[in-house]
Image (cartoon, rainbow, N blue to C red; front, side):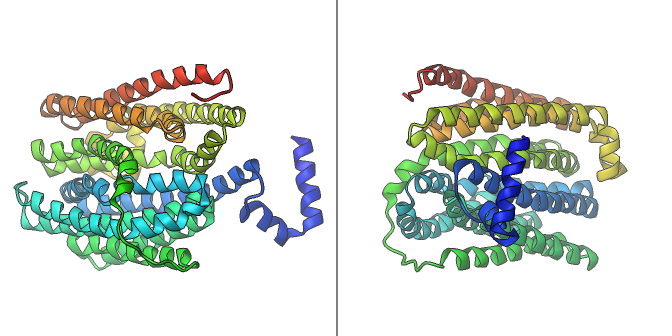
Amino acid sequence: MKGTIRRQYEKLSSMGLKNYFRYMFLENRSDEQTIFKNTFWLFLAEGVNGGLMFLLTIIIARYLGTEGYGQFAFAMSFTALFAVVADFGLSTLTIREVARDKKLAKKYIDNVSVLKLFLGVVTFALIFIIIQFMGKSQEVRILVYLFGVYIILKSFNDFLRSFFKAFQEMQYETISRVIKSTTLLIFVVIGVALNVNLVILILSYLLSSIISLLYNLKTIKKTKIKLKKIKFSILKKSWPFALSMMLVVIYMKCDVLMLSFIKGDAATGIYSAMYDMIYSILIVPAIFYNSLFPLTSKLYNENRIIEFRKIIKKNYLINIIFSVFIIIIFNLFYFQITELIFGKEFLAGAKLFGILSFAIGISSISHVNLLILNSINKEKIYLISTILASIINIILNFTLIPRYSYFGAAYATITAEIIGFTYCLFFIIKYLKKWQTQKLV
């Protein structure tokens, strides 16, 4: 450790502060330095973005109350089911393929940009048609339409950011996400101060996404891009990612939708507030995933097994420690945390923090499983695990929600997390044994 610090000090002295900052935080010089640089920028992005979104959840939940937040959560959860159609796994595919071969960048921009326009139209059409048969009020349908436009904009932003990840230039991702979250919080605070209704409040999401999109386009178009004819063949590679994402969204949002129909807006508002807040903690394992995925994909492709295995072991250890810490904190202080954050109106669901913390712990470690499987082209294993978890979650929600309300939804979530994690881990252990020979099969 002392030797490392001494070397960094000598490097700083010889290079000067400005050049040293560029070397450490703006350039990709080695695998170790690149991981440090990417992790730094993603921690900065998630720290600012996560903090602002955490504050945003509190502001909106307190402003709307249990019923209003229930309507808000339903609209967001319902449209989230269709976000997969808008993206169709293209962002994840782009990261993996372009990280392996930078020459593919222009091909993916050319092909996918116009394709996503087509998918966006299809997405909104599906949302518009299906919500007509859900028996919701006109006000809720308008919320759904607005969130439908929002997820399409978000899909474009995610796709453009995938190039920042693929080139391991996470500083641009950081700027993009901070711009979006900051402008969103500003617009929401202004809306709350003016006492606007929920429909006007959701316009904040659209405006912030447009501002972020303009930044992403400006950054990407430093090189001239010409849009070409759509090539639907690319969907053959992306569909496993798309289906996995769809099932994950179903798994994560079906409880909110079922609560809305079975128990009403108040129960939905309580559960969604707790769920959204505690699941925001997953930004930590998500940082490591996003930082490491381009590199681990590259290491796998180059058959550099020792480095690959070393990164994975460290990532498992970090996520296990993080999970244990979260479970302990939220089971000891769930009542105090609820009253402090959301106020007395939400205290009926305070125990949800303790229950859902177990799901968060398992999900955190599952990020490492996802990193491994996506990196070694075994995304179909994760797909099957999400199918199993989604089926179990839906069945348990139908069984437990009528009797135990939002607590039943929480128990269903934990069970589904355990099943999905166990299935993936079974195959990963098998592959880890093969890698002992230091050759991927």
